[in-house]
Length: 136
Image (cartoon, rainbow, N blue to C red; front, side, top):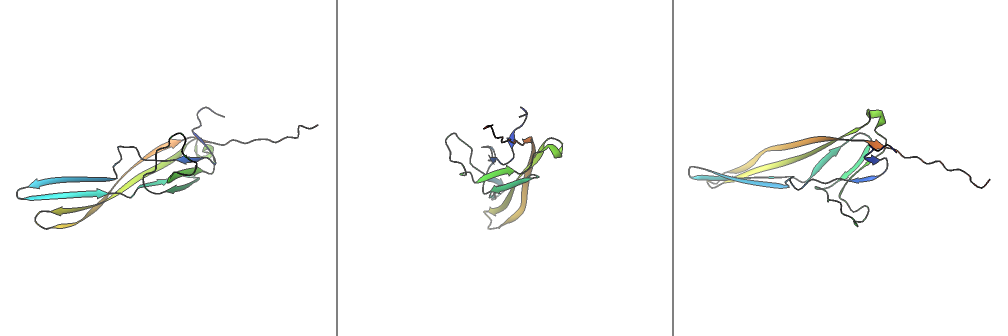
């Protein structure tokens, strides 16, 4: 297998957000006699990649040695090697936040949602075996 391969077809890959990806953010500001608090919250990651099966609820769980197979709430399994895509598969990762505000003057409401996204490239390889009859 090529040393540059990062995952294999059919292998369940755990996905999780890093600790610096906030699930909720709150900010407060004061202007004159009014103080406003804005809170933005997200329900989790959105993932997409060609030739993949994705199941993701929330922000995922970081993998640690000894964790049971199938226990991640956020996984990606590739169904085909990335060779036909020029060698790598592009994974799109996003987080959308819904936001609202409250103010000391009694006003409150929803704000437009805010999204952030990024991409990463993964080289997906495929391993095949050949069974032979060695009993000749």
